[in-house]
Amino acid sequence: MSLRYAILAILTAAPLTGYETAKRFEGSVGHVWHAPDSQIYPELRRMEAEALVEGREERWGPKGTKTRYYITESGEAAFRSWMATPLKYAPWRDVAHMQAAYFEWAEPASVRMHLEQHAAHYTEQIEQWSSQIEAIRSHEHPMIAARLERYPAEQHERIVAFKAFAYEGLIRTAQAEVDWAHSGLELLEQLDGDVPVAEAEN
Amino acid sequence: MSLRYAILAILTAAPLTGYETAKRFEGSVGHVWHAPDSQIYPELRRMEAEALVEGREERWGPKGTKTRYYITESGEAAFRSWMATPLKYAPWRDVAHMQAAYFEWAEPASVRMHLEQHAAHYTEQIEQWSSQIEAIRSHEHPMIAARLERYPAEQHERIVAFKAFAYEGLIRTAQAEVDWAHSGLELLEQLDGDVPVAEAEN
DNA sequence: CGCCACTAGCTATCTACATAGTTATTTGTG
DNA sequence: CACAAATAACTATGTAGATAGCTAGTGGCG
Image (tube, each protein chain N blue to C red):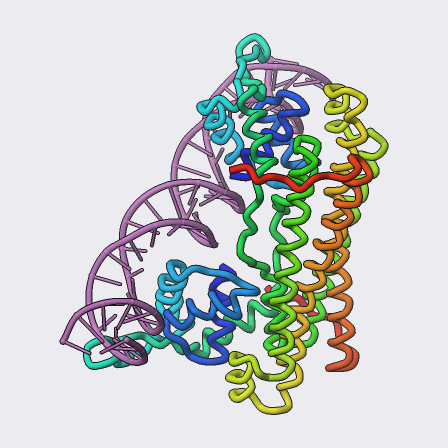
């Protein structure tokens, strides 16, 4: 159900075609929420059936047509109501930590590989999120620019502040993952001394 | 596919019936990995078909029978091979942070509710994981005790260290979530001054 | 002896999501 | 003009997982 609200959220900034929506989920929004186009097209049609969005046919060249989806009053209301409802937190499921609990079954070199991979993955995420924050704060981010144009100036501070805040949270948790991986590498050295770099299996 | 390896992991400590396996995923293991019994029974049968586990029929009272699953050589090999293979990190999908990015659509009281809920949720998780760590370090944890009995004393340190390490990672990230929520409450006060507690919708 | 909680095992349905296609049109490049 | 790349929209299949149900035997208690 969250995909629906993610779509409503980006449609509050600008009306989009299915294709454009999918591109958003591949690009900037994809750093926070990911969805393939095969989910987006049917979801948009379901949302239209429920009158949360309105699809308007547009000419596309001499022969083709495309549908641009506009958020409706009742779509905005649904989004607002979701924003006022407590989230339910899903039961835990984290492969990396589950696997770490059984590291005694891995070669020390594999443990090192996993921990280095973990740190590298989250370090890269931090870099991407950080550059998103910069673009948001400077209003250079195209989605933010489009959004700010639609809303009165007195709301701009809030809009920018909350978006930056969301990304800051992702960075905080990612940093905790990196720190954890590093502390794991220290633990590994303590247990086994200098561990060689793994040769990859597969 | 990860459920399969989570099951193999706990079967390395002791052979279990489907029912016992499901109970593990409700209880202590459930703090790291969750799965309902409706997934576990068919998965165990698939694993038996692939010879990763061996099911042995046991008498259960005068009339009933139950099946106890034992990990096989090839099951251990599959687990070890998984432990040597790099994980693939799934694309990001986090409802709480996605929602936070659009907090300008919520009443200040709702924002406060969400942030307080977020902090409370992860604070509770931290408490549960902390008590797990204590039980692991003191060898009081029943799963750990069973496991240590099966493995030679020189491996005990590794087994305990990695399990505690895994939980420490969960605690670190959860603490980052709590800190983030608190920084959000500060931001909210900065933007709106004193915000009243929300009345729940629904 | 009747009742109930627990143990045991299983099924059915639905949604979310991943993966991997297909078709056709437009637009820019050599 | 041929061709590639991008745009647009859609489908099909499979797995993971959530939710909710079912049947039936066991063992203890009043």
